[in-house]
Length: 339
Ligand SMILES: [Zn+2]
Image 1: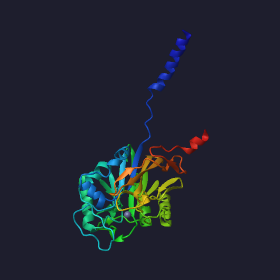
Image 2: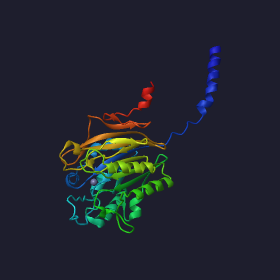
Image 3: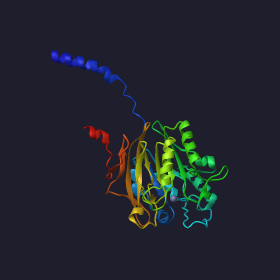
Image 4: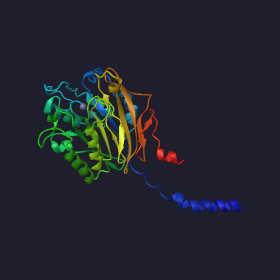
């Protein structure tokens, strides 16, 4: 009997705890960033024949709250290839049905967006708008080109900015003409601060920079990444070199210098056919954990997820780059050491 009374008393004591509302979970967003999407040539032919170059990435991409990649080509039927460029790309508008299925937004800040001139660039923006694919890093004028992509999900507000700094600079937007956002240091710093003032919980610059086929970031990439983090960026991600370039921390903030290619043909070596998808777990305090997943592109530039090997990953508290196998979650090194 005494036992029963004690149990009843314990239950009464516990009742207020049971009735108390559970604290609201901290707002969290999972975000995937991919490298260069070049949808002309091989990938364009695959799509024209009814294929979907992104089909093999569907489950991985579908597992995140939001997905972004760099659109490394105009999508248009107008314009003329610039005679001054060795490689020029232009994809058919139908490719955007494939992009729309897998990605929420694309960056226009790159060295191919203007391959067929300003009119084709503006046509690209119109097609993206018509499909409901968000875009940033380029616009009908300078102000539009520098406006952040705002991601508002699960109570978090994330501003993603994009800049190109690989020639030709003639692609740059002006006060009243279309083009891409250029990574002039003072302009980048002003944009990061403005995004903070406008209420961004997190600010992420998505860069198009570095030397092609160089496996290490350049001195310029390192310097600019530090300038951006000192100005208030929470992490920095890049594309363009056609190769992955590793990751490092600066003042506790992650820099992933190059994600490499995502959909792109004409590359012969394994290094150039390998890219990373970067998955970020974000909350109001910043980056909580992250992992990269390697993809390998076939002859047509069609990627599939690699199932072997390890790629960089990391968990909060920050400061150490770990390596994860496919589908492995990064562990928290500090916690493990305490045991
Ligand atoms: Zn590029």
